[in-house]
Length: 539
Image (cartoon, rainbow, N blue to C red; front, side, top):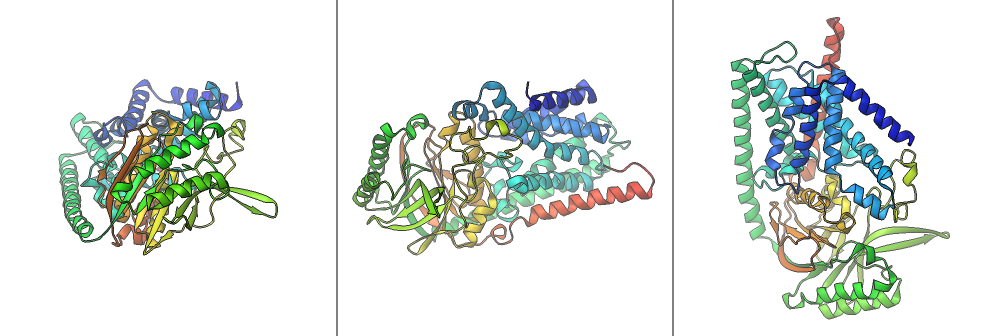
């Protein structure tokens, strides 16, 4: 048994011994309910009460006990949400079951730490309407914001993404980003918890929620959601008018459905390339201005492999359209070779117009994070450590337009899309290859996050995936021509090019930073009050 496994077992024993069985059940239930809120379960409404069992389980617990309750919730949630890492690590990293489970447990424990911190601090939030309605959601958003950036960041499926299909609700993200939606969801959970405390007559750290407090909370939240709904409705109408009056670009997305186990096999290189070229030519009668291929659709070094590049260029010239092609690339400098995950913009005449190198690399697929901790998978993951980071986050110049390209997991980082839009990107394009994850929840989860990038910046988003999900997303967050997984597809649609500058695009994560300031102020005030009153600190 490895040292990592022994530490995880010790942690598990400590948590079980620390909490009573009712608290364990509540914490476990919240973890399951959180996971069920995300694609592809279809139970997104569950998010609005998913934290209620955790809150109930921490009734009158100490801060230490609340921390472990939150840790259990987080481990259960992320282990079940990210289960798709197991087949990925076994199939492509060649790990046996126990090491693969260990990796998933370690990642789940790390992500769970943020929920544990939230549970620890929220355990001391007073039961007054202001505290419940402001501080608890602010604490949650603060933890999500920190998770987005710490240790290179891993903001996979923040709570707000669970509501990506709620078209009126997500409009607020052009002000607050996804964090605003997370705030609303936790706000609802906090109110339901107040209702539970009132009905059950349970005390929250020696205090009961009285009728006036509860009525004040319900009225305030009702008013708040009415404003959000009103804003969503008005904003939708405005954006639709803007889209109607804007310039349109005809774009074709190609989903080649190339088997990942054969994709990089030299014996299949010609056949897979011909397949995607033929699919692209099938869209010729719809006269696309731009044809978008998925990430690494060209399974060779584009512009270097002369034979295969010539084959692609002939197809481009026949199509009469410009192409965006995902392909690996490399650069040499003083006998040192650096490899990149790239996107090439090629004109209909076969001329290279521009090139983008991926800036934010994805863990395990392109590099191994926490190498000292995950020593046992270093240099095992196929392709890990092969790619270098692109130097700048920049747009591609395409005639009178600029394109904001994001390759694979880059789309889950809001600041990348925002930077592209600030650099005058008229369209956001996400090329990806989710074939690594098979028919699991990963492609659905990945797609849900891409939708919010369109709304935050009010830009059309075009997504081309090797095996799906490919789709068009309009600036209001509506999804069009969504393709199924593991099906060949070629879809063409005319998409609006907006120039609207949103509050979020201009000011970024101001809302999340405000929440962080509120959380810090609450923690600091609790510390001061604990010292001046000669009582235990809040934390």
